[in-house]
Length: 102
Image (tube, rainbow, N blue to C red):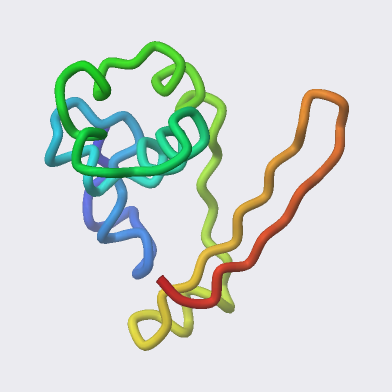
C-alpha cells in the first residue's frame, strides 16, 4: 500500500511503500529492504527477482516492521540520510543501531 506523498514525512517520501507489490515498489520500501536484509543477510539485485520478492519469510517479517519518523533525523534530510534501527528479540532484548549516513 502506498501512503501517498501527502502522508509521508520528508525522509520517508522516497521509500514509503509498506506493502510493495512489484520490484519497483520493493526498491522504495523500507519494510521490504529491512526484512530482506534480515532474512537473507543482504540486499542485492536478486532481491528484486520474483522468487525473492515472494519469499514467505520476508513477507511475514514485513508485517512486523514499524516505520516511524525521528524528528531529528528527518530535519537533517536531505543533507544527511540517517536511520535508526531498533530490534526487539523474542526474549525482550532491545538492539539499537544508528546509521548516520547511507
